[in-house]
Length: 208
Length: 208
DNA sequence: GGACACATGTAACGGGTTACATGATTTC
DNA sequence: GAAATCATGTAACCCGTTACATGTGTCC
Image 1 (cartoon, rainbow over the protein chains, first blue to last red):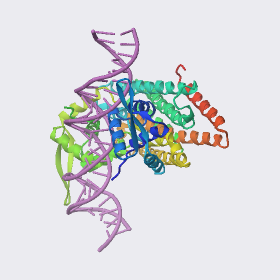
Image 2: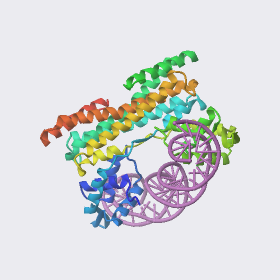
Image 3: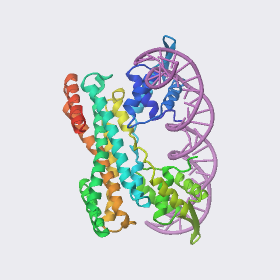
Image 4: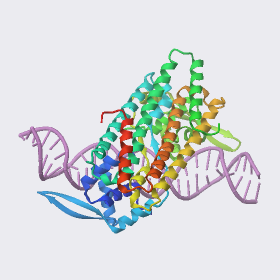
């Protein structure tokens, strides 16, 4: 019944910008969407073919020497499909953060469990920051492939920067708290934990 | 080959705390994990059965009047499996944020697309805040089911609070920027977008 | 001449979801 | 007496992943 997934629309959106060879399209999608809509390349190739069957895109063959590639373009139907979707209710954001699961369960593992998890989170957030900066630099120097799209892309970038920061700062705060707790009694540690919780509730300005 | 998913470990972790009836266990998991490890209830029932086949849990029958329920407890093997996993490398955090996809593609939809997306994100973040606060309140009043677990759970809670805040603040910043841009020329708007990007790069303290 | 990126897939599998079924118990 | 929630699942399906295959062009 439901013919399209958000991934279909992501593809149609890239094609609405311009035509691409499958390969180029997919590389660009990885660049743009990896951190908030990650998908395996093989699946994107398959989805392109499906979109063709559904008449949302059409293809032409291109040759560079002996090498052949398929160039995809959006069809009028594809444009309508995309536009219609953009009028529907957005899905809720959905996070899978295995690290938090590990923190939650850390006391059932070896004593270093928590610290090792923090280290990994820190690394991953660092990679995201670097990637985001690389893309931003292209816009700042005017070499980005879609300079004219900058108006909305800044919003996406802005989110990503703060998103990376969320993890980094969480690691910092957690490490600080762990250090403060060192050498304290279980009772003191619990009081400190409660205090942290109290501070956090205050941050959300909701009735307590 | 790979016998367990992170979901298996999430279940084992809850069972490491104490024994539960399937229903209670799953309700508690929803409460604890919904925002960073969301899973459908039916799948959790199935996984429990699988864990039993693999001897990671064992069950006893309990009767309340005519109603029967199955009580699950972790086995020695289950404990080992959990502990071993906690020693492995954590997986990267993974976000699916359809709203950002919509922002990215908003110019292919109706003019209200962006604003409607912001509204939905704001709502969802609000729900998360309320939920987080409800749980926190239980710890502060000492009525939480696992008061003694508070030491690590504050870290999880701390993340969730800042996570909700991430979305809320992003919505605020984006709306402000949109308002500032109103009535400006395309050229001015682009300059403003670049300026926002520059500010964000500065936030990440990386070499530009 | 070898490594690596280009360019495009296919096959098998699997984790997870939706939708539904069923009967007991509590609450209004 | 109806409605909600307790308490358990099952069946069908699907979106997506991993792992692999295959050949071309380019760079050193």
